Length: 483
Figure 1 (tube, rainbow, N blue to C red):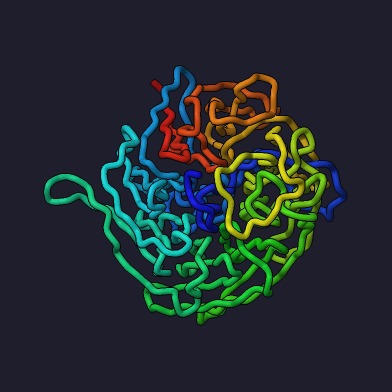
Figure 2 (cartoon, rainbow, N blue to C red):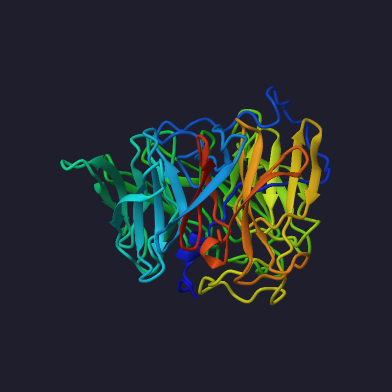
Protein backbone atom coordinates (compact mmCIF):
# COMPACT_ATOMS: atom_id res chain seq x y z
CA UNK A 1 0.00 0.00 0.00
CA UNK A 2 1.21 3.48 -0.76
CA UNK A 3 -0.54 5.12 2.18
CA UNK A 4 -2.15 3.72 5.27
CA UNK A 5 -5.95 3.86 5.28
CA UNK A 6 -7.23 7.05 6.86
CA UNK A 7 -10.13 9.39 6.43
CA UNK A 8 -7.63 12.04 5.40
CA UNK A 9 -6.26 9.76 2.72
CA UNK A 10 -9.82 9.41 1.54
CA UNK A 11 -9.69 13.12 1.01
CA UNK A 12 -6.30 12.65 -0.67
CA UNK A 13 -8.06 10.37 -3.12
CA UNK A 14 -10.42 13.23 -3.70
CA UNK A 15 -13.70 13.20 -5.02
CA UNK A 16 -14.60 15.94 -6.14
CA UNK A 17 -15.40 16.98 -8.89
CA UNK A 18 -15.67 17.91 -12.60
CA UNK A 19 -18.24 15.25 -13.03
CA UNK A 20 -19.64 14.72 -16.31
CA UNK A 21 -23.13 13.72 -16.92
CA UNK A 22 -26.75 14.10 -16.41
CA UNK A 23 -30.00 12.60 -16.50
CA UNK A 24 -33.31 11.15 -17.61
CA UNK A 25 -36.39 13.29 -17.80
CA UNK A 26 -38.38 13.90 -14.65
CA UNK A 27 -41.22 16.34 -14.10
CA UNK A 28 -40.08 19.43 -12.30
CA UNK A 29 -41.67 22.62 -11.06
CA UNK A 30 -41.32 25.50 -13.50
CA UNK A 31 -37.68 26.61 -13.39
CA UNK A 32 -36.28 30.00 -14.34
CA UNK A 33 -34.83 30.20 -17.82
CA UNK A 34 -31.09 30.40 -18.35
CA UNK A 35 -30.34 33.73 -19.99
CA UNK A 36 -26.76 32.85 -20.96
CA UNK A 37 -25.22 29.94 -22.85
CA UNK A 38 -25.32 26.33 -21.64
CA UNK A 39 -22.20 26.75 -19.45
CA UNK A 40 -22.96 30.18 -18.00
CA UNK A 41 -23.03 31.71 -15.50
CA UNK A 42 -20.40 30.27 -13.20
CA UNK A 43 -20.81 30.79 -9.44
CA UNK A 44 -19.79 34.33 -8.44
CA UNK A 45 -16.28 34.81 -7.13
CA UNK A 46 -16.16 34.76 -3.36
CA UNK A 47 -14.49 38.03 -2.21
CA UNK A 48 -12.53 36.10 0.44
CA UNK A 49 -11.19 33.47 -1.95
CA UNK A 50 -8.60 33.49 -4.70
CA UNK A 51 -9.23 33.69 -8.46
CA UNK A 52 -12.30 32.01 -9.91
CA UNK A 53 -11.37 28.58 -11.26
CA UNK A 54 -8.18 28.05 -9.25
CA UNK A 55 -9.04 29.00 -5.65
CA UNK A 56 -10.32 25.61 -4.46
CA UNK A 57 -9.88 21.96 -5.34
CA UNK A 58 -13.20 22.17 -7.17
CA UNK A 59 -12.37 25.52 -8.80
CA UNK A 60 -14.50 27.90 -6.74
CA UNK A 61 -16.24 27.95 -3.38
CA UNK A 62 -19.43 26.70 -5.08
CA UNK A 63 -17.47 23.56 -6.13
CA UNK A 64 -18.56 23.82 -9.78
CA UNK A 65 -15.45 22.03 -11.12
CA UNK A 66 -15.70 24.53 -13.97
CA UNK A 67 -13.27 27.29 -14.84
CA UNK A 68 -13.32 30.47 -16.94
CA UNK A 69 -9.71 29.76 -17.94
CA UNK A 70 -8.67 28.01 -21.17
CA UNK A 71 -6.48 24.94 -21.17
CA UNK A 72 -3.77 24.11 -23.71
CA UNK A 73 -4.46 25.51 -27.19
CA UNK A 74 -4.71 23.51 -30.40
CA UNK A 75 -1.46 21.92 -31.52
CA UNK A 76 1.09 19.49 -30.08
CA UNK A 77 1.03 18.76 -26.36
CA UNK A 78 3.82 17.98 -23.95
CA UNK A 79 3.62 16.43 -20.50
CA UNK A 80 6.13 16.53 -17.70
CA UNK A 81 6.01 14.51 -14.50
CA UNK A 82 7.13 16.34 -11.36
CA UNK A 83 8.16 13.67 -8.86
CA UNK A 84 7.37 14.74 -5.28
CA UNK A 85 7.14 11.31 -3.57
CA UNK A 86 3.68 12.42 -2.48
CA UNK A 87 0.04 12.11 -3.46
CA UNK A 88 -1.02 15.60 -4.53
CA UNK A 89 -4.79 16.05 -4.72
CA UNK A 90 -4.82 19.83 -4.30
CA UNK A 91 -3.15 22.18 -6.80
CA UNK A 92 -4.34 25.79 -6.63
CA UNK A 93 -3.13 29.03 -8.21
CA UNK A 94 -3.35 32.59 -6.92
CA UNK A 95 -3.53 35.97 -8.62
CA UNK A 96 0.28 36.00 -8.92
CA UNK A 97 0.15 32.86 -11.10
CA UNK A 98 2.19 30.65 -8.76
CA UNK A 99 0.62 27.22 -8.20
CA UNK A 100 0.46 25.94 -4.61
CA UNK A 101 0.12 22.20 -4.02
CA UNK A 102 -0.94 20.44 -0.83
CA UNK A 103 0.40 16.89 -0.86
CA UNK A 104 0.75 13.90 1.48
CA UNK A 105 4.12 12.18 1.52
CA UNK A 106 4.19 8.49 0.62
CA UNK A 107 6.82 7.73 3.25
CA UNK A 108 5.89 9.23 6.60
CA UNK A 109 2.50 10.45 5.31
CA UNK A 110 3.13 14.01 6.47
CA UNK A 111 1.21 16.81 4.75
CA UNK A 112 3.52 19.11 2.80
CA UNK A 113 2.88 22.37 0.94
CA UNK A 114 4.81 23.01 -2.28
CA UNK A 115 5.16 26.28 -4.18
CA UNK A 116 5.56 25.47 -7.88
CA UNK A 117 7.42 27.25 -10.67
CA UNK A 118 4.66 28.13 -13.18
CA UNK A 119 7.10 27.67 -16.08
CA UNK A 120 8.07 24.10 -15.21
CA UNK A 121 5.95 22.78 -12.34
CA UNK A 122 9.06 22.18 -10.23
CA UNK A 123 8.83 22.75 -6.49
CA UNK A 124 10.69 25.95 -5.56
CA UNK A 125 9.77 25.91 -1.85
CA UNK A 126 8.16 23.48 0.56
CA UNK A 127 6.75 23.56 4.07
CA UNK A 128 5.94 20.51 6.14
CA UNK A 129 2.81 20.62 8.28
CA UNK A 130 2.15 18.87 11.56
CA UNK A 131 0.93 15.35 11.05
CA UNK A 132 -2.06 14.39 13.16
CA UNK A 133 -3.89 11.13 13.59
CA UNK A 134 -5.73 11.86 10.34
CA UNK A 135 -3.02 13.82 8.51
CA UNK A 136 -4.82 17.15 8.86
CA UNK A 137 -6.96 16.92 5.71
CA UNK A 138 -6.28 18.10 2.18
CA UNK A 139 -9.32 20.18 1.31
CA UNK A 140 -7.69 23.60 1.46
CA UNK A 141 -8.32 26.82 -0.47
CA UNK A 142 -6.52 30.03 -1.43
CA UNK A 143 -7.76 33.24 0.17
CA UNK A 144 -7.91 36.70 -1.45
CA UNK A 145 -4.25 37.30 -0.49
CA UNK A 146 -3.02 34.09 -2.21
CA UNK A 147 -2.55 32.36 1.16
CA UNK A 148 -3.32 28.67 1.53
CA UNK A 149 -5.97 28.12 4.21
CA UNK A 150 -5.67 24.65 5.76
CA UNK A 151 -6.08 22.80 9.07
CA UNK A 152 -3.03 20.85 10.22
CA UNK A 153 -2.72 17.79 12.44
CA UNK A 154 -2.86 19.86 15.63
CA UNK A 155 -6.32 21.11 14.57
CA UNK A 156 -4.98 24.62 13.98
CA UNK A 157 -6.40 26.75 11.16
CA UNK A 158 -3.40 28.08 9.23
CA UNK A 159 -2.96 30.72 6.54
CA UNK A 160 0.23 29.95 4.63
CA UNK A 161 1.76 32.64 2.45
CA UNK A 162 4.75 32.68 0.09
CA UNK A 163 7.34 35.38 -0.50
CA UNK A 164 10.75 36.06 -1.96
CA UNK A 165 13.76 35.70 0.32
CA UNK A 166 16.70 38.07 0.59
CA UNK A 167 18.74 35.64 -1.51
CA UNK A 168 16.19 35.77 -4.35
CA UNK A 169 14.59 32.39 -3.68
CA UNK A 170 11.14 31.58 -2.37
CA UNK A 171 9.81 30.55 1.01
CA UNK A 172 6.49 29.40 2.45
CA UNK A 173 5.55 30.64 5.90
CA UNK A 174 2.68 30.49 8.40
CA UNK A 175 1.06 33.94 8.35
CA UNK A 176 -1.57 33.19 11.02
CA UNK A 177 -2.75 30.38 13.27
CA UNK A 178 -6.09 29.79 15.06
CA UNK A 179 -6.69 26.69 17.23
CA UNK A 180 -9.91 24.78 16.57
CA UNK A 181 -9.37 22.14 19.27
CA UNK A 182 -12.11 23.64 21.47
CA UNK A 183 -14.72 22.30 19.03
CA UNK A 184 -12.81 19.60 17.09
CA UNK A 185 -12.13 16.50 19.19
CA UNK A 186 -8.73 14.87 19.28
CA UNK A 187 -10.01 11.79 17.46
CA UNK A 188 -11.74 13.88 14.77
CA UNK A 189 -10.37 15.75 11.76
CA UNK A 190 -11.37 18.65 9.54
CA UNK A 191 -12.26 17.34 6.06
CA UNK A 192 -13.70 20.47 4.42
CA UNK A 193 -12.97 24.22 4.39
CA UNK A 194 -14.52 27.16 2.55
CA UNK A 195 -15.02 30.90 3.25
CA UNK A 196 -18.42 32.56 3.39
CA UNK A 197 -19.33 36.01 2.08
CA UNK A 198 -18.61 37.61 5.49
CA UNK A 199 -15.02 36.34 5.59
CA UNK A 200 -15.57 33.57 8.13
CA UNK A 201 -13.99 30.18 7.46
CA UNK A 202 -16.52 27.35 7.49
CA UNK A 203 -15.21 23.89 8.34
CA UNK A 204 -16.62 20.38 8.62
CA UNK A 205 -15.19 17.34 10.38
CA UNK A 206 -15.39 13.67 9.58
CA UNK A 207 -17.35 13.16 12.79
CA UNK A 208 -20.18 15.47 11.72
CA UNK A 209 -19.27 18.82 13.32
CA UNK A 210 -19.83 21.95 11.20
CA UNK A 211 -18.41 25.27 12.38
CA UNK A 212 -17.21 28.76 11.60
CA UNK A 213 -13.90 30.37 12.53
CA UNK A 214 -13.11 34.08 12.46
CA UNK A 215 -9.35 34.42 12.65
CA UNK A 216 -9.58 38.20 12.97
CA UNK A 217 -11.44 37.91 16.29
CA UNK A 218 -10.49 34.37 17.29
CA UNK A 219 -14.15 33.36 17.63
CA UNK A 220 -14.99 29.73 16.77
CA UNK A 221 -18.57 28.41 16.77
CA UNK A 222 -19.94 24.98 15.84
CA UNK A 223 -22.98 22.71 15.61
CA UNK A 224 -23.11 18.91 15.62
CA UNK A 225 -25.14 17.17 12.95
CA UNK A 226 -27.20 14.07 13.93
CA UNK A 227 -25.28 11.20 15.53
CA UNK A 228 -24.15 8.54 13.10
CA UNK A 229 -23.82 10.92 10.14
CA UNK A 230 -20.26 11.26 8.88
CA UNK A 231 -18.86 13.84 6.50
CA UNK A 232 -16.58 12.25 3.92
CA UNK A 233 -16.33 15.03 1.34
CA UNK A 234 -15.67 18.74 1.28
CA UNK A 235 -18.17 21.58 1.70
CA UNK A 236 -19.32 24.41 -0.57
CA UNK A 237 -20.26 28.02 0.08
CA UNK A 238 -22.45 30.48 -1.82
CA UNK A 239 -24.45 33.60 -0.98
CA UNK A 240 -27.36 31.26 -0.10
CA UNK A 241 -25.34 29.50 2.61
CA UNK A 242 -23.00 26.57 3.25
CA UNK A 243 -23.78 23.15 1.75
CA UNK A 244 -22.70 19.92 3.43
CA UNK A 245 -23.45 16.35 2.36
CA UNK A 246 -23.13 13.66 5.02
CA UNK A 247 -23.35 9.90 4.58
CA UNK A 248 -27.13 10.27 5.02
CA UNK A 249 -28.35 13.70 3.86
CA UNK A 250 -27.57 17.07 2.29
CA UNK A 251 -27.79 20.25 4.39
CA UNK A 252 -27.78 23.99 3.90
CA UNK A 253 -26.56 25.97 6.91
CA UNK A 254 -26.21 29.66 7.72
CA UNK A 255 -24.59 31.54 10.60
CA UNK A 256 -26.02 34.27 12.82
CA UNK A 257 -24.24 37.54 13.60
CA UNK A 258 -22.14 35.81 16.25
CA UNK A 259 -21.03 33.16 13.76
CA UNK A 260 -23.10 30.31 15.25
CA UNK A 261 -24.19 27.95 12.45
CA UNK A 262 -27.67 26.44 12.20
CA UNK A 263 -29.45 24.16 9.75
CA UNK A 264 -31.74 25.87 7.21
CA UNK A 265 -32.85 22.65 5.51
CA UNK A 266 -32.02 18.94 5.38
CA UNK A 267 -32.75 16.51 2.54
CA UNK A 268 -32.04 12.78 3.01
CA UNK A 269 -31.10 10.70 -0.03
CA UNK A 270 -31.03 7.01 -0.98
CA UNK A 271 -27.71 5.72 0.37
CA UNK A 272 -28.23 2.18 -0.94
CA UNK A 273 -27.51 -1.13 0.81
CA UNK A 274 -23.82 -0.37 1.40
CA UNK A 275 -20.63 1.17 0.08
CA UNK A 276 -20.11 0.38 -3.58
CA UNK A 277 -16.74 -0.79 -4.92
CA UNK A 278 -14.88 2.26 -6.16
CA UNK A 279 -16.22 4.42 -3.34
CA UNK A 280 -14.63 5.33 -0.02
CA UNK A 281 -17.67 5.62 2.24
CA UNK A 282 -21.25 4.37 2.48
CA UNK A 283 -23.15 7.28 1.03
CA UNK A 284 -22.87 9.97 -1.60
CA UNK A 285 -19.40 10.60 -2.98
CA UNK A 286 -20.31 14.20 -3.83
CA UNK A 287 -19.04 17.46 -2.56
CA UNK A 288 -22.33 19.38 -3.08
CA UNK A 289 -22.22 21.60 -6.16
CA UNK A 290 -23.88 25.00 -6.58
CA UNK A 291 -24.99 26.03 -10.09
CA UNK A 292 -27.99 27.51 -11.90
CA UNK A 293 -29.38 30.62 -13.63
CA UNK A 294 -27.65 32.96 -11.16
CA UNK A 295 -24.68 30.61 -10.65
CA UNK A 296 -25.80 29.32 -7.23
CA UNK A 297 -29.60 28.97 -7.23
CA UNK A 298 -29.46 25.17 -7.54
CA UNK A 299 -27.55 22.56 -5.56
CA UNK A 300 -26.77 19.06 -6.85
CA UNK A 301 -25.34 15.75 -5.62
CA UNK A 302 -25.29 12.13 -6.78
CA UNK A 303 -26.92 9.62 -4.40
CA UNK A 304 -25.83 6.02 -3.75
CA UNK A 305 -28.98 4.20 -4.89
CA UNK A 306 -28.66 0.63 -6.17
CA UNK A 307 -28.38 -0.55 -8.82
CA UNK A 308 -28.43 2.90 -10.52
CA UNK A 309 -27.44 6.19 -8.90
CA UNK A 310 -29.41 9.40 -9.45
CA UNK A 311 -28.52 13.02 -9.93
CA UNK A 312 -30.53 15.10 -7.46
CA UNK A 313 -31.14 18.83 -7.98
CA UNK A 314 -32.47 21.10 -5.21
CA UNK A 315 -33.44 24.74 -4.91
CA UNK A 316 -30.56 26.15 -2.86
CA UNK A 317 -32.66 28.54 -0.77
CA UNK A 318 -35.43 26.12 0.24
CA UNK A 319 -34.16 22.58 -0.30
CA UNK A 320 -37.12 21.73 -2.56
CA UNK A 321 -36.11 18.84 -4.81
CA UNK A 322 -36.47 19.94 -8.40
CA UNK A 323 -35.56 16.73 -10.18
CA UNK A 324 -34.16 13.22 -9.84
CA UNK A 325 -32.57 11.54 -12.86
CA UNK A 326 -30.74 8.18 -13.19
CA UNK A 327 -27.15 8.60 -14.44
CA UNK A 328 -24.11 6.45 -15.27
CA UNK A 329 -26.27 3.80 -16.90
CA UNK A 330 -23.76 2.86 -19.61
CA UNK A 331 -21.07 1.74 -17.15
CA UNK A 332 -20.95 0.85 -13.47
CA UNK A 333 -23.38 3.12 -11.65
CA UNK A 334 -21.58 4.64 -8.72
CA UNK A 335 -19.52 7.79 -8.17
CA UNK A 336 -17.01 8.96 -5.59
CA UNK A 337 -16.72 12.29 -7.39
CA UNK A 338 -18.52 15.59 -7.15
CA UNK A 339 -20.73 16.64 -10.08
CA UNK A 340 -19.34 19.18 -12.53
CA UNK A 341 -21.95 21.86 -13.13
CA UNK A 342 -22.07 25.16 -15.00
CA UNK A 343 -25.07 27.05 -16.31
CA UNK A 344 -27.71 24.51 -17.33
CA UNK A 345 -25.37 21.51 -17.70
CA UNK A 346 -24.27 18.93 -15.13
CA UNK A 347 -21.70 16.20 -15.72
CA UNK A 348 -21.13 13.07 -13.61
CA UNK A 349 -18.12 10.74 -13.81
CA UNK A 350 -18.34 7.15 -12.58
CA UNK A 351 -15.83 5.51 -10.25
CA UNK A 352 -17.60 2.16 -9.78
CA UNK A 353 -14.92 -0.51 -9.36
CA UNK A 354 -11.96 1.90 -9.29
CA UNK A 355 -9.04 0.17 -7.50
CA UNK A 356 -7.81 2.33 -4.61
CA UNK A 357 -4.57 1.15 -2.94
CA UNK A 358 -6.07 1.83 0.50
CA UNK A 359 -9.44 2.54 2.07
CA UNK A 360 -10.47 4.51 5.16
CA UNK A 361 -10.46 2.43 8.33
CA UNK A 362 -14.22 2.84 8.71
CA UNK A 363 -15.10 2.25 5.04
CA UNK A 364 -16.84 -1.04 5.69
CA UNK A 365 -17.42 -3.91 3.28
CA UNK A 366 -18.49 -2.98 -0.22
CA UNK A 367 -21.66 -4.30 -1.83
CA UNK A 368 -20.82 -6.22 -3.99
CA UNK A 369 -17.40 -7.15 -2.64
CA UNK A 370 -15.61 -6.21 -5.87
CA UNK A 371 -16.20 -5.09 -9.45
CA UNK A 372 -14.31 -4.27 -12.63
CA UNK A 373 -13.80 -0.62 -13.55
CA UNK A 374 -16.03 -0.03 -16.57
CA UNK A 375 -16.14 3.73 -16.27
CA UNK A 376 -18.93 6.11 -17.15
CA UNK A 377 -19.72 9.71 -17.96
CA UNK A 378 -23.15 11.39 -18.15
CA UNK A 379 -24.48 14.81 -19.02
CA UNK A 380 -27.78 16.19 -17.68
CA UNK A 381 -29.45 19.31 -19.00
CA UNK A 382 -31.52 21.43 -16.61
CA UNK A 383 -34.17 23.50 -18.37
CA UNK A 384 -37.34 25.38 -17.50
CA UNK A 385 -39.34 22.20 -18.14
CA UNK A 386 -37.17 19.80 -16.13
CA UNK A 387 -34.02 17.69 -16.26
CA UNK A 388 -33.08 15.36 -19.09
CA UNK A 389 -30.22 12.96 -19.69
CA UNK A 390 -28.44 14.46 -22.70
CA UNK A 391 -25.92 11.66 -23.16
CA UNK A 392 -24.48 8.72 -21.28
CA UNK A 393 -21.29 7.00 -22.34
CA UNK A 394 -18.48 4.74 -21.14
CA UNK A 395 -15.36 6.76 -20.35
CA UNK A 396 -12.84 5.27 -17.93
CA UNK A 397 -12.15 8.59 -16.24
CA UNK A 398 -9.42 8.21 -13.61
CA UNK A 399 -9.72 11.82 -12.44
CA UNK A 400 -12.41 14.31 -11.57
CA UNK A 401 -13.15 16.07 -14.88
CA UNK A 402 -12.95 19.84 -15.23
CA UNK A 403 -14.96 21.99 -17.64
CA UNK A 404 -13.54 25.12 -19.27
CA UNK A 405 -16.11 27.73 -20.28
CA UNK A 406 -13.36 29.55 -22.18
CA UNK A 407 -12.57 26.85 -24.73
CA UNK A 408 -15.66 24.66 -24.24
CA UNK A 409 -13.81 21.44 -23.38
CA UNK A 410 -14.13 18.89 -20.63
CA UNK A 411 -10.74 17.59 -19.45
CA UNK A 412 -9.83 14.42 -17.58
CA UNK A 413 -7.33 11.52 -17.53
CA UNK A 414 -8.50 8.17 -18.92
CA UNK A 415 -7.20 4.84 -17.63
CA UNK A 416 -6.43 2.44 -20.51
CA UNK A 417 -6.32 -1.29 -19.66
CA UNK A 418 -3.26 -3.41 -20.35
CA UNK A 419 -5.42 -5.64 -22.56
CA UNK A 420 -7.52 -3.41 -24.85
CA UNK A 421 -11.24 -3.96 -24.67
CA UNK A 422 -11.23 -5.32 -21.11
CA UNK A 423 -12.44 -3.68 -17.90
CA UNK A 424 -9.66 -5.13 -15.75
CA UNK A 425 -7.14 -2.92 -14.00
CA UNK A 426 -3.45 -3.55 -13.34
CA UNK A 427 -0.31 -1.73 -12.27
CA UNK A 428 0.64 -1.66 -15.97
CA UNK A 429 -2.34 0.38 -17.12
CA UNK A 430 -1.65 3.49 -19.22
CA UNK A 431 -2.96 6.97 -18.37
CA UNK A 432 -4.02 9.36 -21.13
CA UNK A 433 -4.86 13.05 -20.87
CA UNK A 434 -8.19 13.41 -22.65
CA UNK A 435 -10.29 16.32 -23.93
CA UNK A 436 -14.00 15.69 -24.41
CA UNK A 437 -16.65 17.62 -26.33
CA UNK A 438 -19.28 18.36 -23.67
CA UNK A 439 -22.00 18.65 -26.34
CA UNK A 440 -21.67 15.02 -27.43
CA UNK A 441 -19.37 13.18 -25.01
CA UNK A 442 -16.95 12.42 -27.86
CA UNK A 443 -13.19 12.48 -27.34
CA UNK A 444 -11.51 15.22 -29.39
CA UNK A 445 -7.82 15.07 -28.34
CA UNK A 446 -5.55 12.84 -26.28
CA UNK A 447 -1.98 12.81 -24.97
CA UNK A 448 -0.46 9.70 -23.33
CA UNK A 449 1.08 10.56 -19.95
CA UNK A 450 2.73 7.30 -18.92
CA UNK A 451 2.30 3.73 -17.76
CA UNK A 452 2.10 2.42 -14.21
CA UNK A 453 1.08 3.63 -10.77
CA UNK A 454 3.43 6.65 -10.97
CA UNK A 455 0.84 8.29 -13.24
CA UNK A 456 -2.34 7.15 -11.49
CA UNK A 457 -4.52 10.24 -10.72
CA UNK A 458 -6.53 8.14 -8.25
CA UNK A 459 -9.70 10.14 -9.00
CA UNK A 460 -8.03 13.44 -8.05
CA UNK A 461 -9.00 16.62 -9.89
CA UNK A 462 -6.81 18.50 -12.35
CA UNK A 463 -6.41 22.29 -12.18
CA UNK A 464 -6.44 24.49 -15.28
CA UNK A 465 -4.38 27.65 -15.44
CA UNK A 466 -4.14 29.62 -18.72
CA UNK A 467 -2.78 27.13 -21.25
CA UNK A 468 -1.67 24.57 -18.63
CA UNK A 469 -3.23 21.64 -16.76
CA UNK A 470 -1.75 20.42 -13.47
CA UNK A 471 -2.90 16.89 -12.62
CA UNK A 472 -2.12 15.40 -9.24
CA UNK A 473 -1.09 11.73 -9.09
CA UNK A 474 -0.17 9.18 -6.45
CA UNK A 475 3.47 10.29 -6.63
CA UNK A 476 3.45 13.95 -7.62
CA UNK A 477 2.08 16.19 -10.38
CA UNK A 478 1.93 15.97 -14.17
CA UNK A 479 2.10 19.30 -16.05
CA UNK A 480 0.39 19.30 -19.47
CA UNK A 481 0.90 22.19 -21.89
CA UNK A 482 1.57 23.07 -25.52
CA UNK A 483 4.98 22.37 -26.89
